[in-house]
Amino acid sequence: MRNKNVQMSLFESYNMVQKVAENNVPELLNLLDDHINFDELIPLEIHQAFYRRYGKPRDYSLESFVRFLVLQRIIGIINDKTFLTVLRMSKELRNFCGFDAVPHASQITRFRQEFSDYFEIMFIRLVDLTEPICREIDEKKADYLIYDPTGIEANVTENNPKFLNAKINNAKKLAAKNPKLNAHALAYSQMPETAKANPFVKHQYINGHFCYAHKCGVVTNGLGIVRHISFFDEKFKRKHPEVVSKKTDNPQLDKEVSDSVSLKPVLSDFFKAHPSFSYKTFLGDSSFDKYDIYTMLRDDFHFERMAIPLNPRNSKGYHGDFDANGTPVCPVDKTPFTFLGVCGGKNRSKRFKWVCHKSKTIPKSSKRICTCEKPCTDSAYGRCVYTYPDKELRFYPGIPRDTEHWDNLYRHRTIVERTINILKDTLGAGCRKSFSQRTAKTDIFLAGITHLIGVILAKAVNNLKLFKSIRKIVASCA
Image (cartoon, rainbow, N blue to C red; front, side, top):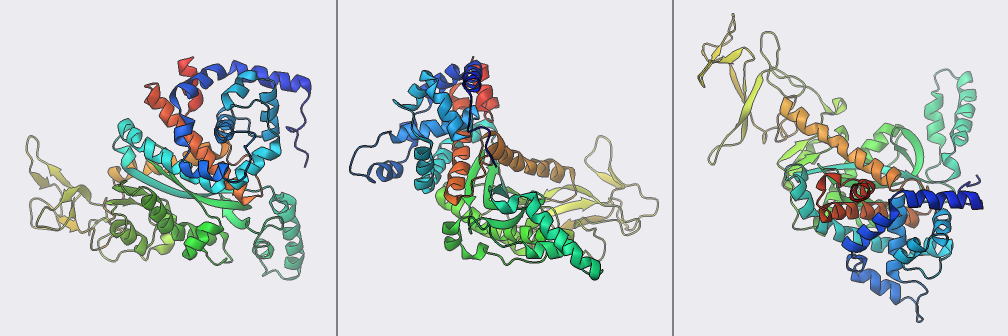
C-alpha cells in the first residue's frame, strides 16, 4: 500500500512547517533546552555502545539522534521522511536536534534497530527520576500499581482483513456440507501462528480482535504515569520461558493465559530494576483471578491489597450464607451484610467485620441495635460475622469486595488502558506498525521516555496538573 505521507509537494511541506510554527514549537524547544539535560539522561552504556562501534567519528552525535526521536513524538509527526522534510525547512528544529545537515531516513532506522535494547536502560533511569515527582503529585494514587498487557500491530499481510475473510469463506463452504462445523472456529485454527514476513510477529487476540502483533506489558501507577514496560521479545522469553503458552481453540483463553502467566516475570523485572520501590495496592482485570496469583502478589511482592474482579469461570460459588463475592448474607432474605471495617491488632489476625443490614446505629451513640422484625439471633446488636483474608485470600484480597470502597478503588484500573492509548496513539508507538521487532521495541520505549519527560517538565514549570501532556505544558507557558 502506498504511503501518502512519504511523497510531499512543496505546498504540503510549507503548510506542515507553518502548522508546526503555529503550535508553539519555539516555546517547546526553549522548555526542553532549559529543563531537560539529554546528555545526563542518556546512560553511559548507550554512549559506550554508540561511539565504540566504528573507529572513525560519527557524522551525527548520539544526543542529536535522541533529541530528534523525542521531538518527533512530542510534535506528533511519526513518519520519519515527513519529519525529516520538516527539519530541512526549519533551521530552528535542526539547531535543537544538533544537525548541521539533515540525516537520511535509513540512518534513523538503523539507529532505532541497533540500539533498541539501550533505550530500555534510558527508560528505567527516567522511571527512577520521576518516582519522587509521582509521590509529590498524589502519594495515595502513586502507591497503586496497575498492569495490563497490550499489542502493537505490525504491518504484515496477515493483518489485512481480506486474509481472514478468505479463511472464513473457505470454512463456510465446508460448513455448508457439515452443519455441526463452526466456520469461525475453523478459520481461526487455520490462521498461521506467525506472520510470513517476520516469524516474531505472533497471532494474538488483542483489544477484542484478531491480529498479528508485537506483545508487551505496561505497568502504571494510579496517576497513569508509566512505571515499567516489558517487551515480550525473544530476549524476554529466554529469560522467562514460563511465559510461552500453548495456543488453544479459544482466542479469549489464549489472551487470559498470556496475561496471567506474564504477571510474575514482569513484576520481577520491575522490582529488580527498582529495588527501592514498594507499593501496597495492585489492580488488574479478571484475567488475573487465580488462587496462586493472590498468594504470589502478597508473599513475593508484598502487596497488601489486590483489587482483581472475580472471574465467573474460576468461581465454584460459596455454600451457606455468602454470596458470589464472598460477602456474608442474611440467612432469611439473602441480603448482603454491611461492611463495618477492618479489625485485628498486634496479637490478633486481620479480619473484616460485617453486620446485619437491619442493624442500625443509635442516634448520638456508638451502639447499634437490630431493627429486624424476625431476628435470626438473640443479640440486640444483630448478627455479626467476621471474615479472615488470610483464610481465603481470593475472596478477601485485603479489601472487601462489593463495597463502595472496592468500587472507588477499582475504577482506577482503567487508567492503565488510557496510558497505553497515549503511548500507542498520541506518542506514536502504535502508529508506525513496523514488522521489525527491534523497531517496535524502540518505539514503545521512546514513547515511554517522552511520556516521562513530560512529567519532568511539569515539575520544572511548577504545573504538576499537566503531567500527562507535554503539549498542554507548552500551551500553558506560551
